[in-house]
Amino acid sequence: MARNLESKCKLCRRAGEKLFLKGERCESPKCAMVKKAYAPGMHGSAQHKSSLSEFGRQLAKKQKIKRIFGVSEEQLKRHLRDAKKKTGSASNNLLIQLELRFDNVIYRAGLAQSRSHARQLVGHSQFLLNDKVLNIPSAVLKVGDKFKVKQSKTNKTYFQNLKEILKKGKRTPQWLSFNLEKMEGQILSLPAKSEFSVASGAQEIVEFYSR
Image 1 (cartoon, rainbow, N blue to C red):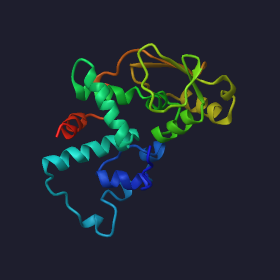
Image 2 (cartoon, rainbow, N blue to C red):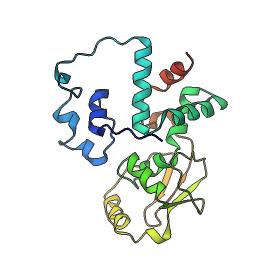
Image 3 (cartoon, helix red, strand yellow):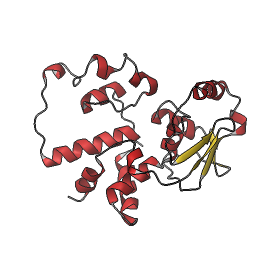
Image 4 (cartoon, one colour):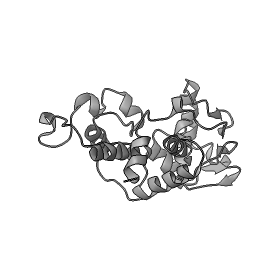
C-alpha cells in the first residue's frame, strides 16, 4: 500500500482526536494530543472547526478509519465490497472485516505495540496461521483460525520481553483467545459491535462510496 509519510502525531492532531497510532506513547503525557491538541501548521492553534458539508463529514470519517487501521484506498474499497456480499449491515460487516485483518488481530492479541508494528512483524514472517507461514497483513481471518508466533522466533529478545510485559495483564477482546505460554491464539467468534476499535464511521464510508 502507498505509505503516508506524514508524522503519526500530526495525523492525530489533524483528526482532532487520538487515533492510537504509536502504541504506549499515545497513553503517555508525551502524546502530541496532550501537548498540542490542535491542528498542525502555522495557524493550527487558531483554527476553529467549521461546520462540514455532508461530503466533508463522510470524507473525514473515511480518512479516520483508514488511518486507524492503516489501510489504503484500494484495500478499504475491497473490504467494503466483501462486506456488502455478506448478510446484515454493510457498515457492521465492514468493521468486522477490518477487525479480522491479520495485522489487527496480532495487535489486538497484544503481540505488537501498534497496528503499523503488527504489519511489520507479519510482513517479516514472524507468525503462522493454521500452522502455515502467512506474511500478508491484509488477510482477513475466519472464526476458528489459529495463529501463533513461529517456534524459531519465540526465543528472540522481543518476544521474551513481550511475555514479561503481557504477564502484567492485557485485556484481549472476547472474540479472540491468546495463550501466553504457547504464544498462540484463536479467533473464537465474529467481533461484537461493542468491541469494535472504532465506535462509528463505517456508515459514512458506505454512504461515501455510494455517491
